[in-house]
Image 1 (cartoon, rainbow, N blue to C red):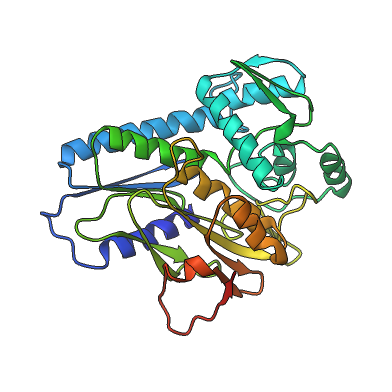
Image 2 (cartoon, rainbow, N blue to C red):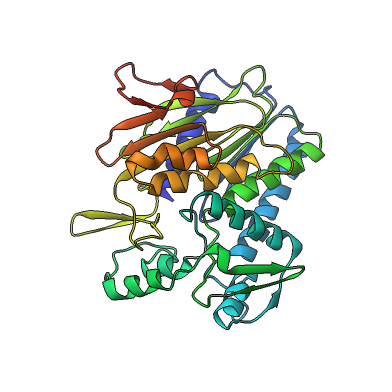
Length: 358
């Protein structure tokens, strides 16, 4: 919740701080708690009643999606989520009928996993659970090196999942899906598409730091802050034109400390251990063609492989997913910015030093 409040504070600063709001400004703002994080919706240029109904519809869609895709919580006692039922079938090597939209998500996730050379791997749910990150509160866990070694050796991957018409099965019973690095981005695209169908031209949707923009905030481009990974303050801002999305992965959001070391929720599927050489990665994604992965999903997914990859291969990981605009803060607080991103980032201090990546 602390992280969510920080994100909201940053958004409030940059959405509202540029100029004083008046009662006449047609900006509707609401927030809720879904996907384990704070959801913040701003709609500009609509009546308060219309904006309230639109916002409520989006939040209900988000809650429904969250319930369906929850990796470890049942919908009710004895009734697993849709994703939970799928994982049970995978573990039992059974075929199972799945919904059309879940099949589309999995097909997209399979493609993205291949593009990322397996660094984006939603199939490692057992590893994520072993590190204690499939629960509401995070605390230090006993590290079972042999168990982690065995889970890595079982090599669960998205390529193990076979989609046939309305059914799915896994060739590897070790596959356990956790779509935590995909669902928030999918929800952003879902909300943006819904608002466009309702002829809403101007909005900003934020799900725990994954943000997508529609239109403008009045006569201004939407502007959001990039949080410093070690302090609850912003180090920079980014303008989000219509249809652009931004996503950040960091080691300051979901983590625990053990013997002076930070263990975050972003796990390298090659080693089975949380990544410790990166503090944060931010990616900026323009609108995508209709037949490709959309900006919201890409902003959620693409930051993970860049975060996980070794420093010398970060640019390669970004380019494999079509990402030109990205920023990395490493474990020593050194800042690296892609050549394209340099022109889009607005530093809040003139003393910021960074290295430009080609």
